[in-house]
Image (cartoon, rainbow, N blue to C red; front, side, top):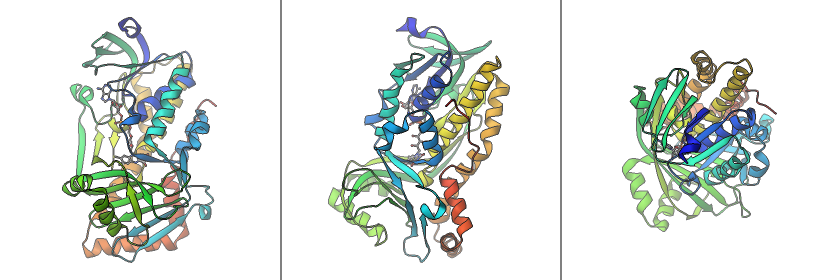
Length: 403
Ligand SMILES: Cc1cc2nc3c(=O)[nH]c(=O)nc-3n(C[C@H](O)[C@H](O)[C@H](O)COP(=O)(O)OP(=O)(O)OC[C@H]3O[C@@H](n4cnc5c(N)ncnc54)[C@H](O)[C@@H]3O)c2cc1C
């Protein structure tokens, strides 16, 4: 194995989660001359992740270009309408995709399915070497590249991409700092069977203590949904442990009549909710990607979607630079990427941060603001259009990838 690794790579991607695997595929199809090392400490994430992701229109567009959408489409459920409500308050908003000339607001896929489509696509590219290996112990900047110190020996790359999610020791060793905002909340995730068919309707319900999202899942019954219930840490721990019947009773109390009735719950998994933003996303021959660069509150379902837009722009820039003879780790090139992605990243992180804060407060003013916000959203078509375009990822510049 060490003989395979100890060479110079165009790209070494550390972390083969959704972001790392997707970038490897994007790069591999963009330029067959590029050789790409993809390393993870664990076997494919598929079995460990019980979340589902709402893929925005911009993500579906990229997956189409990559040729992966045909194998994914049947594993997704389209969100054709969204109901936003506030428990115990008047405000609510109903958004309908057809009103906004969209076929869907997004497509929901279980992360396990998405990860497995990526994993199955990797072997088709001879220019990707994918290995499971102990975590690299260090990174060392070198003239014309970056060395990656691995148990099997060292290798160098024009560009090392850190895509290890919230495991950031390599970046920290290099002195890269992170701004953390701990919401003191935990997202409890599970799949539910509801009494009613979802018919493509997603729910976002704010409860005072946090938020509940119900996303439609594919399946013949049309009654399976993915739950993301954001709770205070102790409540989440209790809710993860209680018997399924008690869980269902507590959940139904929060859902009220708008969001339907849950009948069954499967495996429950918890994720701490934090905003963690890297102070630097690039250095010479180094780039931070996905959650390693920006983790955010899951309320708006934007984390992976934002990363896909990052990756598409990065791939476009790298390809253009390659054709002009500019190395992938060139700092000027990487800074151009940061500049191009700044607005979209800033907007997406800010909205994911503000929504739960506004809806988490009980003060009268905040209550008035959020009810007014929901009522206005319900009444004013331009606002609804803006909200929908944001969610679909259509406010950002569209990257040009090899067709
Ligand atoms: C409850 C919840 C719901 C969400 N819903 C949505 C949604 O609807 N839509 C959306 O777009 N986003 C959503 N997100 C966000 C999305 O899940 C994340 O943005 C995405 O999973 C991040 O992927 P990643 O590959 O960057 O990181 P990760 O998924 O954390 O993957 C990191 C990988 O790196 C590996 N690794 C770690 N350290 C090392 C190392 N030192 N060496 C080698 N390998 C290493 C790990 O084993 C792992 O495989 C949600 C998040 C949460 C918490």
